[in-house]
Length: 211
View 1: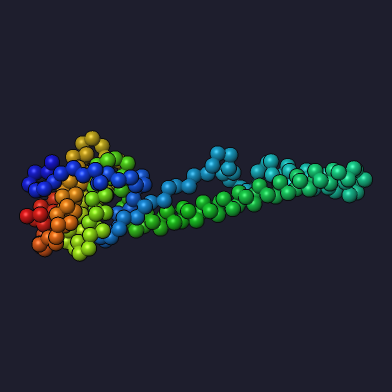
View 2: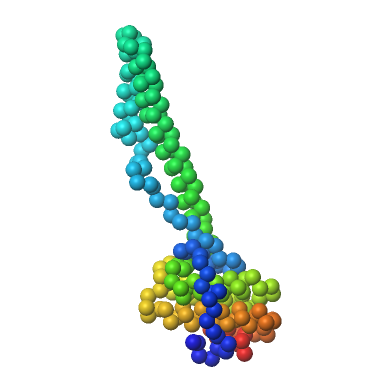
């Protein structure tokens, strides 16, 4: 319970499921899901596209095909040679395709990171804060209430620096989650009175809006 903030109560709806990390934008607005890092799959080439197996298959297939054509080896070996060549060339092509997709995903991730501050939402307290802010976002004419909720998110994101809150930080997050939830409840009943609180933290602003 946050002292001095009326009407605060627990809401199950403020603990909805979401991705593990979101971006709090620099200006008030919808939060952005942070794409997961696309790590290479087990066994996927880490360096060059041509590894020893691919070189062996390509070279072996080429040598065998040449031998069939020039020395009169059984014709059925042509099928084996072509299969080795195809496999030796197909594996690098597939690796190149996966590398292109991974680079695009990493570029999107970097672009998303540049839009704001990372907030880890793996803990229920942070998820509740994010969900309560989402309720403010969905309420028409939220105005200063949305700004105050965004400030609360920004404060938490700056404190945590992209990680989950530690035990000593949980109270800081919970206070803001409860305050933003109470503000969303109040706004659902009607508009709040605008106030001027330049420089005040989110809790002071929300307290003034709820007064």
